[in-house]
Image (cartoon, rainbow, N blue to C red):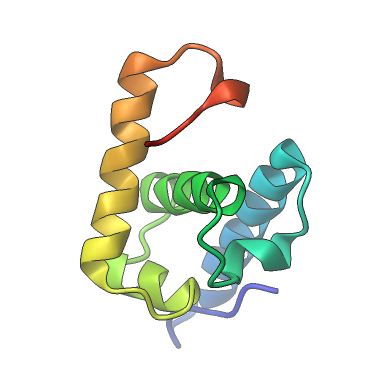
Length: 102
C-alpha cells in the first residue's frame, strides 16, 4: 500500500493516486503490486517498475527523490534513468505490451 509522501493536506490524495497507478501497472503486467517494490532486477519486474515510476512522475507533483524513496529509497539518478528509458521506449515502440529494455 502506498504511503503518504508529505505531511500536508494533499498527502492522502497523492498516496491514493500513486497506489492507483501502481495497481494499474501491476494489473497490466499480470503481477502483484508488491513486486514493483522488490529489489528484483529481472526484466519482467524492472520494466513495469520503470513504467510506474514514469507515470507517477508525470501524473503527480511528487518529487523524484520521494518517488525513489517510495520504491525502496532508490537514488534520484535511478528514478531519472527510469523516466528516460520509458521516454525513449515511447518514442521507438508502438506495442506497449512488448516493451523490451536492453
